[in-house]
Image (cartoon, rainbow, N blue to C red):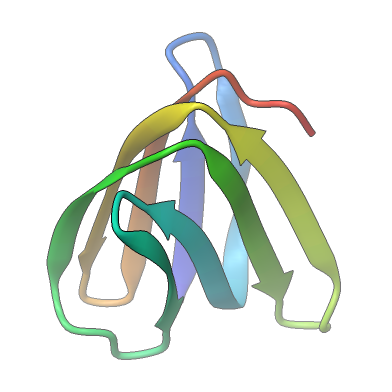
Length: 82
C-alpha cells in the first residue's frame, strides 16, 4: 500500500509500506494492506511506518487526520518531529 504524510508546509514521506501505526484519539491503531476505508482524527503521539524492506521510520505529531481508501493512506498532520 502507498502512504503519504503531509504537513501544511511540505511532504514528509511518500512510499510503499507494509504497515502504519498512528495515534488515534482513543488509542493507537495500525493500518495494514486491504484495510477497510476509514477517516479518523489523530491525537498527539508517534506515527510508525514500516516500509517494504522492513525499515522503520517514526514521526512525532501533535494532531491531524488519516484517510484510508483502496490501499492509499493519507496522513495530514501538524507539528512533525522526525
